[in-house]
Length: 525
Image 1 (cartoon, rainbow, N blue to C red):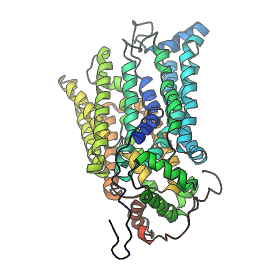
Image 2: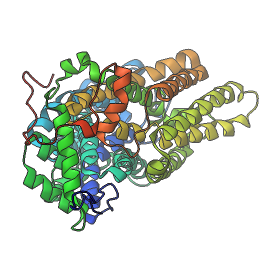
Image 3: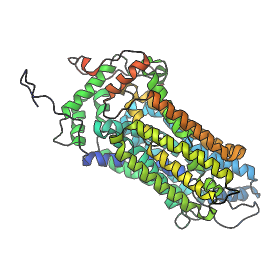
Image 4: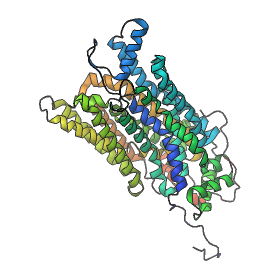
């Protein structure tokens, strides 16, 4: 292409980059060694299934609960009462999202100091340490090590769930940003499915295999430590925050291929950096009072809160209880849970394939519509299945339908949108808020759902249906389609709603030499 007025060639279009081997391998290494931990450790604690025969306490405990009880008996000569054991088990489950909340609060400091790739590498310390502690807990006869490890692996998951989308979103070319962004959720689901497979009673979900089952969480961390150092850091981080143009250019050439016009993308990053130089890098406190990002911040909070409060982790944490209440034989629930994991992974992969074709909004809206419908029908089915036993099958279909809906939109798409709607200078602070909301709502659901289910029974799913409706309404009214737009163009779309003027991309002064973004004047908070 040539400019006819001045006779100079124009930059080649850069938005149609092809998927290169380096980009694929970087994504695999980064995702498998990080958010895999999230999915694996959500599911693994719930899926060592019931074994043995009934004891003096009546119900047959899960293998880990039995370990807790046996250890208490060895120390004190008595078994725990049911309330104490339930409290201890609830603590074990809820320590993971609590650790995730702690991780989300420190991730901003880490990605600014050590970069996106560096943060993921350092984060492996938490995964490996927790794997060792959980692996030796049975030999040490100390269930406290499992509880401590749940906090540590939760910190690992909290850091990874914010750092990885940031890393992948900044690595990806514009036309592949959606597909790579959904890899965060794809590998969460792979972690869930792996835990469901390994925790089958015939494999490791038994009284002798559970220490290995828990310790497997360290394997992806070791693989990442050995592989990720050979792949590039985020070019955007390298250029905008470090001011190292040559390293950023080399990284782009590795990620895009030798025939790709990296200078056009370099200029797009310089444009983004120039539009935000005046504001500097925002801290979390500044972000809450910064009017030009008001609706972006609200959107991040709504997307992440809606993702969790719509009920997905109630299914993950208490899948066996839901299937049993729907009429599934408890001895067969592990296979039903495994089947739901397969459906979850397949639908998330389909979402990754079609997101650049259909866009973000339609996947979010259709996903929430399916989830809402499934919750409403499930409520009716659970209420009537005692009089109409055949409705137990409808209940299972509703649970599977819910998983399909969540896997299409509410689970994978927010990881893409939260990266796209904020610029580099505010991305770290926004992801700190994003992570805090995600893990706090995760913790609330895991802690309160059993009590809600006891109190109102099947009507608890009406609460989730209401959240689905409200979240979908917000998305429909507020969040624009981000497919095919640059980060600057997306922020222009929010500017009118925020009541501010945002310079169009072609209005930005281009003669200004590049300097790295201003550092935060106080702290990351």
